[in-house]
Image (tube, rainbow, N blue to C red; front, side, top):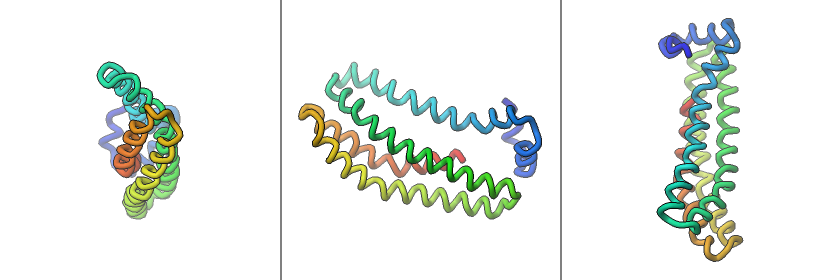
Length: 163
């Protein structure tokens, strides 16, 4: 990887994206998303190892069940980040740096607001979903999804920060 990319000006980065080797550019632009994906994949693995050894199979099962709901919310947030990066990329490609900065700030604020709006929905969903599972898992599913609702605004916000 070319570390010099981090020290380039906006104009030099735009020229690199538009005129240099496509494979090299794709590789450089893919690294932040790849790193985020690795971390997202490691979290359930470490949670599973810790929970199975310390909390028991009931809690691990509740979290395993809840992961599909969390993955849906994560997919939504990743879709928003792809759309935002396309919008920002268009403005950046046109060379309008001031408009790019304005759009970035607006998208950052919007993502946090969307996360705040989705939090109550996540709490409601946690109640509905927890009623449909085994009684032994129900309280733990509700608790895990309910706690995740507090993380959601920051999760959406951090996805847009990598832009």
